[in-house]
Length: 478
Ligand code: NAD
Image (cartoon, rainbow, N blue to C red; front, top):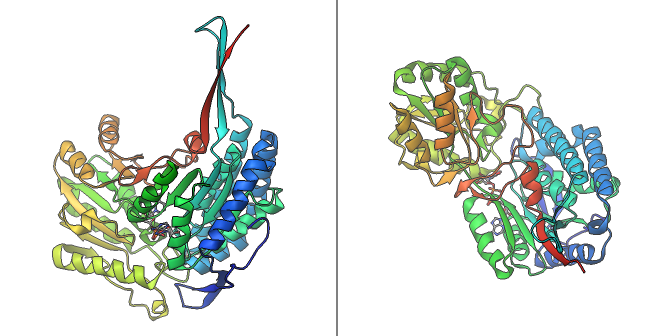
């Protein structure tokens, strides 16, 4: 905060223990409302009177790209912190650091091309200017599942726009955001432009609510559960704050008989096991055409067996533990519902390997014959549990995909471009994948949800515009 690492004003601290083996992996300042207020006042000071919002865009480009360079140079240290606190496997953590560095570079580049426009045709005796201004003080409240990228995808566009920022990372993995603050400082970001408040669980919601309800904050960007997002949105109404919400999902991955089936099956496993299923865009519902149903289930079982559950510090591990005891219990509760209501295809519990007993592991679990209106198919589980639902017609598949309160992502697998595009357009979500899931290797596409999955977009040009206001100036020529 304000360019230095500081204790909480109360002096309180909290501990983080590894979800893999329970070891103590970090001790952090346990900030409360008074720390939140201090952070907001510092950011307000910097926005109203500091140099950053008034800096030339080349300066912003230089700081953001230098921060990207420092992050890359320290990738191992940042990834290690993430692995220890969150249990994310090392390979995934390194991937996240790389994506975060590219995001900083992208918005550094975009800072150079921010421009407005002018209108001089409508009235020959006048000139109209359309300007883009930074939105002001932005507050971030973020989740633990992408503890670095989830902050960077907000921070990079906010800084490129010229905002000052306060941030509250999740108590379950606060370390990466603190390292990011250090590298930005080393890269030349003025003190007080990026301020992080860490807090343990209960005080975290208090700090988040303080940001959301503060009249000194102009914009709030939240990543987390739909219930948390709605609480933030209500509080933000106090000064009609601009709000971005990146919330949950229950995305449908749809497979037609003419798809490349083996590829589709391998990817379908990755779609719900990536980060042990703890990802908002997880393909957690698999819609299978009746004609390939049984054959595809056999392929899923085979590919699920290739997942390596293990110590997240090992490079070969593909699935680490879940984030906490609470989440472990919750996910196993859904597995229990699956056993009672659906047909188990593979997995179905905690792994037998005694080496994994100390961690919050759940096997990759597939249930078939799931009813789309059941809790298993409607609620976000946030663990490695897949619900398989069969369909006969394209219309039925689209209707099933849309029969959800969420609208974040989805996939469609087919060799017919017509089918792919009709389905991609028919499913009401913020992003769709054709013959792939989660990525086709294209960075910087806007990400965000329809319906209960949120509002606003992150990444891409749209992500920058979330941190800008449009101003018009009309000039009468004399
Ligand atoms: P969460 O809602 O419990 O917490 C998210 C953050 O909000 C934390 O920092 C927490 O301290 C804070 N918070 C919680 N309650 C609050 C309140 N009432 N007021 C203000 N702040 C509050 O979510 P989580 O368990 O950390 O993350 C998992 C959720 O995040 C999942 O639902 C997942 O889908 C979602 N998520 C969405 C995206 C996306 O881009 N759409 C990305 C990652 C995660």
